[in-house]
Image 1: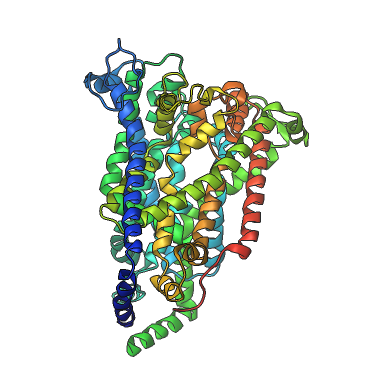
Image 2 (image 1 turned 45 degrees about the horizontal axis):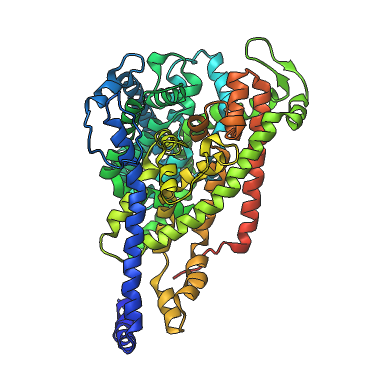
Length: 303
Length: 314
């Protein structure tokens, strides 16, 4: 209330000053035009490369995929079957790669939701000795370059016979991920303390409070984590590259990497595969945009 | 309100009394168990093990052989190691400041109150949700020296001999930096959240004092944004040490023409999984951890001087 009172008189004064000279107005209009011009130019920089590979993906095998001059949008060729061909062609079975990737995605989503909600609940809602120390440790583990651990972790999983299976790529998610724990803890902290108290009075134990009260309220932040896990796993190249040894178990990311680093790939099909690989992330982004950006932004602020 | 507060205080006092608090503590550690187990199994043990391994010569098949500091001594003269440090440093120095400035500039643009701004925000953020592999494949074709769109555009605007990008030892790292610029919207979204968190009162007060836009930017926006800038600086430094996917796709596992794209992690991967030098690769990992730790420590230490945290109440 106070804020609006303070603003009102000022707003009435400011236009009076502005109207005396025409220049600020002209400058403002010019500024808006310039801003829109920049925004449209930047949007073109985002879209044109995608249009360019889309054009290449729709070309038949006999035509050079990247013609001179540059074709930013498909005009001449519309070979939609390239997208199907790239999915089912036998020597690079992208359909199987997709299925494999989805197995990893599903395993990691289950693991992450299981572990991170439990741990975040303890950090957000329970009092215990050492909580500050442990939370600081959690923050520090976010800063450790995970890849630095790939050699010893690989040796460990190799020794217990998990090399060549999906287990090393799924099981660690059941022990939580510092970033998601942090994200969930920040969210769970915002609920009023009275919620826990009321459920305790009603006779719930800690797990029941977690399960019936906190978890249902945390669905939005869980959704954000699911989106992040999906994208992280869909795009993961290093992990599968280290642990998988058979083509039948490969993921989309490895499939693409092998395809492109091979001599003379078939570019139209490669570009089709690449667009297919982009699709899930794009779709997920459009549906979960608000939550996703909100999630990233909140981390940035509190970090 | 008063009665509610009282109840809460009673609860707090009650919870601190002996048995209830102990029960809560036991419950808390039970909830933390998955994470604590993971911390031990997948972090502490591997870190300690890799330190031990870094003093050995081991190809995974024969028993490890203790070689003392040999692995670390070998690094000094190892051509690939020195090259990978150079590539990674070059990338860090070029990319981190550029992405920070570009991201900030973009966020200022996206923070303007214009019609349709949400659509532009959506578009400009799009590249950062795309898979690193897919984006790298896209840019691999865009940066093709002969047929790629980038050089065709450059020739069209009169640059007769554009760089050969990924195939040129000098231009390969700048090409990767250029590619990353395409996804700079990801950083801009974080700045944008920071910008929107700055109280409008500050700007109003400055306007009353007669400040112009440039003064407002340097005396309000930048200081108020320093926590966000600090966060982005730390994460992008760590990110710069960890480039792998992009390098693997753009240059292949060998690190491109004459090792121009042999990033640190790619070299580590090669030494471990390709050459089977697990002891040496563990030593490389330790050097990375220590280097990252030192850089982060220095950044945190200097933070006191330039990061402004708003303290005290409203």
